[in-house]
Image 1 (tube, chains in turn brown, cyan):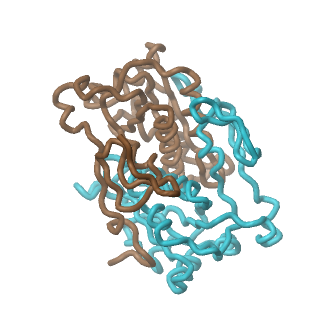
Image 2: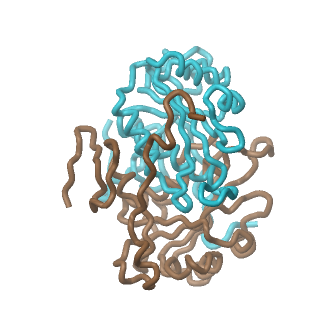
Amino acid sequence: MSRVTDELGRVRASQDGGREASNWVHPQFLDRWSPRALLPEPIPADHVESLLEAVRWAPSCFNEQPWVVVWATRDDREAHARLVECLAESNRRWAAVAPLLAVLGARTRFARNGKDNRWADFDAGSAWLSLALQAEALGYRAHAMGGFDVERAHELLGFPRGEVRPLAAIAVGRQGPVESLPEELRERERPSDRRAVDSFAFRGRHPR
Amino acid sequence: MSRVTDELGRVRASQDGGREASNWVHPQFLDRWSPRALLPEPIPADHVESLLEAVRWAPSCFNEQPWVVVWATRDDREAHARLVECLAESNRRWAAVAPLLAVLGARTRFARNGKDNRWADFDAGSAWLSLALQAEALGYRAHAMGGFDVERAHELLGFPRGEVRPLAAIAVGRQGPVESLPEELRERERPSDRRAVDSFAFRGRHPR
């Protein structure tokens, strides 16, 4: 599908036409979404390295780089199974086939002084978006899940308790046809919309 | 400066040659950085709209979209001055000239049920990176600061106490020459490096 691009490379609609922006924006933000239908097709090692390299260069407070990633590809059956075991049952139904699974966490204290890092989760969030956008650039989809068992992430994946807070499970793979999903998940399989900009961005002052 | 790009559009060094990646990665992650030397040159309204539109399409847990942005351009002198007043003294020295200042916060509870949103900061972090990458795509630099006065953000910018947690102040502008900075800030004016991938990413299990 073709779409109109302005002289700065910005667009007003996603590639598939399903999302419309209110303002011109770089296409990567509109095109990225989190489908559940992922193909089991393996991800080459050098693509996994690119995903982790993108995480590496995320910005962080005092350049603390508080993100931690435990990951497994599907060919490493034992490790992949441990990651599947961390997922909520509702996510296992579609994410268990993903060729790459990961759990992203954040070191909760500054390495430099042991004090609480108020920006640990915030910085881990920018690391997650880096991974998601690098995945898109390589033709994959990345889907983050809040629905996973934090205790199991500590126990099965070794995230040190009291040091690293597991925040999101992530499935990565090429997008598959909606028919590959269990029937009850098919209806939700479309890019989500957003609230209007003026619902979250305020010039000068937050309204009362 | 020219650089080698692979068939997937990935690079191994930043545009200015100052950063080297360990693996092939999309150039936007290596090229993005947070200089202090910003030009006062105004940002057109439609560019500001693009930055906010990029924030809008960030991913979030249950599509909650917990991010909140209060922003001002320099031509709106009163509002811009209020944002400057929220900055730590050390940041005012360079960020006060920025044509766009913002404070990004996160709604701490889910709109749907009033419960604590464990992913509020995490999702605000992905909104921040969306803004930063959209800024880069338009030829600007975005610099996030932990150094600002949270109490003043509540008081001067109206962030509702107990509802929105102010997380980062952000300065956006075109990059200026290092000589435009106060002398004591010039030495630090270069892109930061990163720890190795194997210091934060672990296959299968976090080491003890």
